Amino acid sequence: MAVEKPDMQVNIGSLELKNPVMTASGTFGYGKEFDSLVNLQRLGAIIAKGISLLPMQGNPPPRIAETACGMLNAIGLENVGLERFLTEKLTFLKGIDTPLIVNILGDTIEDYQQLAKQLDDEEKVAAVEVNISCPNVKQGGVAFGTDPHMAHAVTKAVRHHFSRPVIVKLSPNVTDIALIGRAVEEAGADAVSLINTVLGMAIDIESCRPKLANTFGGLSGPAIKPVALRMVWQVAASVSIPVIGIGGITTAEDAIEFFLAGATAIQVGTANFINPLATEEIIDGIELYLEKKGMTSIGEMIGKARTS
Amino acid sequence: MQVYKESAEIVSREQIAEDIFRFTVKSPDIAAASWPGQFVMVRTGDGLDPLLRRPFSVHQVAAGGLVQIVFKVIGKGTRALAAMESGRKLDLLGPVGRGFVIGEEYQHILVGGGIGIAPLLFLAGHILEKNDSSSVRVLLGARTKDEIFTLKGDFENMGLEVNAITEDGTLGKKGIITDLMVELKQEKPVMIYGCGPYPMLRAVAGTCRENNWKCQVSLETMMACGLAACLGCAVLRADMKGYVHACKDGPVFDADDVAWL
Image (cartoon, rainbow over all chains, first blue to last red):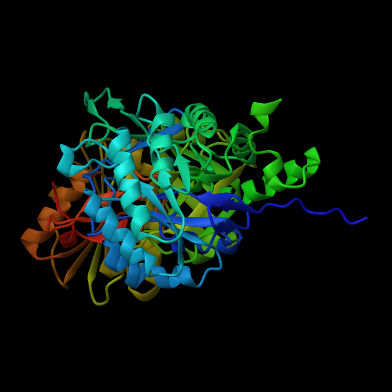
């Protein structure tokens, strides 16, 4: 008797994904970097390294430091800028039969608008993911993502200029993440993804200096998974749009916890650095789990930990 | 660029000094694809702490798909690695990065400091494929004799002339590597290939500039992925207007292309 494979498909707004496993922005380059190691066609979606309107050179080194089960980074959003992304990076991604989601970031609402408008013209860009963890230079440098009104405003601006799904990536460095989630939902976001990195630091006790040139950096990796899971749980209870879980997902078991907490899809980030095959292994592991549990689709496990 | 992920058996482990180890692993794809100056990203255990892979330059490759790395125990990752026994599998990713460019018609001077000597043996082998041993000189520096004694012998076994210098005078003269460089007699245009700690390379690059010698250096930085995805391994460009990355633009750079801080 042929056993039917579980249905791995999920929807993020109008975007259909063949499976719920994506690569987190900033951990997978522009896809090509992993081409010789990963079957890119198997991924649910590729989320490209965050793009700003103009190129950014990033922070001085040291930019990264390892911590227990995690890493701190202060890359400073180094990226090639929109123009070079469109002319140099997009061609390769067009040849991959996997939806491309472009992570965007800016200093002002106008930056985000411009990015949304220009990316809307590129059919390959299936969705945008809005990084709202950046400081708003016109509002005294307060991060868009830490203020519900600013988060609302930037989401609304992108929504207005981009016709396909808009995902807003939430910062965990807030008192009430669900409040921000509701604000961006109200502004028209099709989904939220969370969490971005957790602000942290490390000190070198020999030199008696911070390990990062930037002093503070974003903590990622397995160390932040419990925090991320808790926040996904809270946001999933507060919004009715899909929640995309991110934060320390290294194995299929980690990913499954996020689905059970209410995530519709997940992103694999730092794990790509440790095990470039992590995404494919997680896809296989999720499928195996569904079969073992007798579930016929991803949908059956979404939020299951909340109901019983 | 083709990068391989291999589960490589440790076929031999050698303790060449108190805290320095040389591992030989069976990694056929990486062995076949490696070029001197390139490196491998090694997982130092199965667990999540230490989390990140560690970069090690390819020390040598040998027939039978063998790859060697040399490392010094300096922290959690290298300590875990040093404890691994022969027969265990090591998770390797590589080869990555841009290696040395071997110039033609040069007097090739290999300048290594401490553990930075590691990739130069592989380089020496490649230079000797097309050049006479008389056109190659090896200058090695270290704090003390133990750090470099074994590797010095390996160069000598290749028929190369080696000059060593140590800070404590236990091997060769007492001094630092640039002391040996200023004694160089220039017969042909000089190409310096340097690898070692940053202050040493800065001094090497300075000496090269003064003498108008061409100079390539292999730089070490903090690095998470080795695949040009994390962008953690930033190195300030010579024009100070942006960064290059040790994992894709390097680790070997023309000394004139980077800022020396």
